Length: 170
Image 1 (spheres, one colour):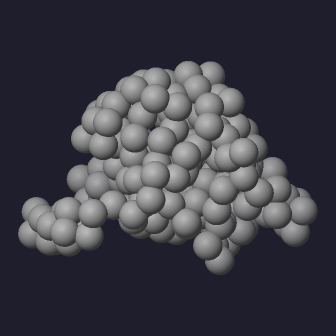
Image 2: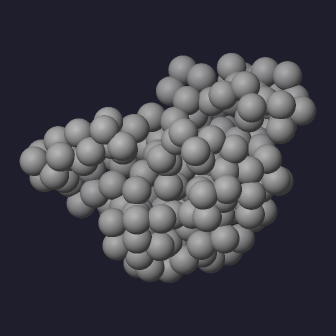
Image 3: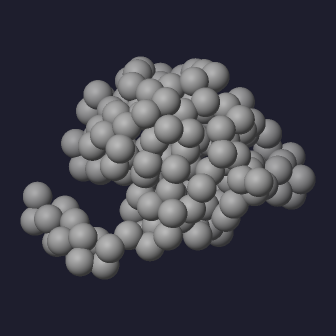
């Protein structure tokens, strides 16, 4: 069964990720207490990524292949999941605990991430589709470590097109 294995928030851009056992997902905003939810993320003025997800399997592969251990949150993603390919959640609605999200786009690593990790090779290690995805919160609710991840299927294509057009013109 797909499940949440770790949760992380950072109160502001460039601050260390803090591991939490439970967090509140806020509709149209992100995770309460996280930089993306408050608009204080490093890329917040330019990027609309409410929640980020990464697969624990990708992190394990990175450690096995490179020796880089990112399990302490240096990956800078909010939600670590196991048992599901996060890319399969793109353009799908899915539940994390009590919250409903929609996968919006891949989240490739950036140079800023590597600066914060202070570890050479982090950005390239998270490349090749290992960087995870962005998601928007459709319905808020609590999310906790151990909660299931349930794919609810494709979101309505008309809604997806309207959403993308709006984001391109904002």
